[in-house]
Amino acid sequence: MHQTMMKKFKKVIPVMMAAVLAFVSVPFTAMADSSKVVTLGANLTEEQKKSMYDYFGTSADKVDTIEVTNADERKYMEGIASEAQIGTRTYSCSYVEPTSSGGIQVKVANLTFVTSSMIASTLLTSGVENCNVVAGSPIEVSGTGALTGIMMAYEKASGEELSEDQKATATEELVTTGELAESIGQQEAADLMNEVKQEVIEDGLKDEDEIEGAVNDAADSQNVSLNEDQKAKIVSLMKSISQYDYDVKALKNTLENLEGKSEGFFSNLWNSIKSFFTGGDSDGGIINNTNDSILGDNAVIDSTIDALKSKDSGDGESFWDKIVNFFKNLFGGDDEDASDNSDKGGTSDDADAPDSSDSSPDAGDEAPEDGTDSPQDDGTGSGSDTQENQDGQGTQGNEGQQDGTSE
Image (tube, rainbow, N blue to C red; front, side, top):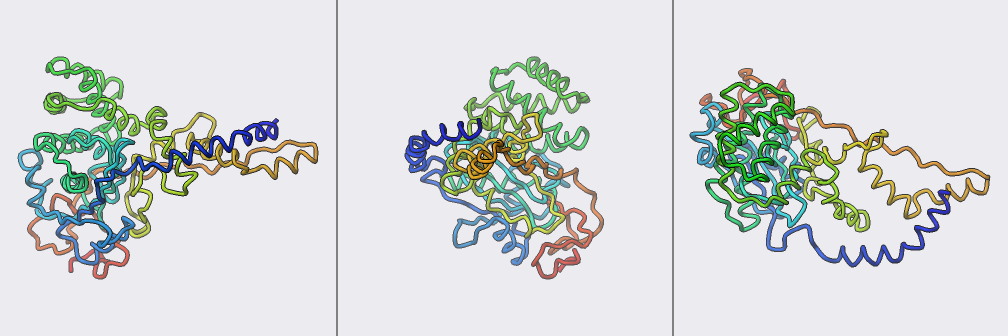
């Protein structure tokens, strides 16, 4: 039966190949008028800056680079975040690639207060619809200022100026979600905020009572308890978000990706099929070029793409595995085995696919200061990208950082 099906499939291979080659000859992922931009925290050492280029899988001569200062972060965070959250130093870095489709995909490394899902959702609020983002630091930091650099990079890379009001609202959303995560959990906070935001935008909710009802419904569906202060902050935030016009299709695309829904996956599936034939990167673009080993074995890493690749179909094999294995088998992956077994009177069984559903480690809540000085620390503050407990773990290759002490 298997061998017969393979013969039938191979009859349509020429037609399928012709269609695929026709489509892949058209560049429809990267924006023709955009570039790739890296942002570097101003308080990093030169060695740490180099390590971040290496982590991103690029170099200074291949991208535009922006240095982000604490003053840049204060522009959006003052009046929204506390002084402790803003701090006096900037360590977060980012790598941004605008795209023309696929929604927003984010990977974060060593950011403990914010997650990839939080950043992706808040970028939607800022007015971004499609892009790939890597945000990280060579040392563990809170990451509260990461969004500032990402928005700066997106504007430079795309040539598009985002609304100042929407950028401020996006920053408020990141801080509100991060604070909520400290009491109910990071994933729960992100899911709740995304559910409320989707209902507010899709249904055009503007009345405060209607928005409060959406918040209550989301809390019930997520099985979390909110106090009155938390509800008030979410309602106020969503009331601000309701003022702006958003592309509902783009919103759903990214939010479904964050939830790991198959609908969101299928919206990006063609890019994955294209990559199978061309040998290029699958969804995520620059995200696929990161080198996690640069940050060491203890790096805290998570990505929105993990939700797609770990979406399980119920029989132990992820949906992504099924797609990949289908195309491998379709184009002769186990044809010889089938032929050999046929000669012996038997049938061929597909080999077990490796399990790709391993989830990345949770970023965890922001750890308390342990008195260890951060790089260039003069004792004036910890910075909005607050350095976390190092326990002697320095960035690989960064001289002077191996024992976690200041230079």
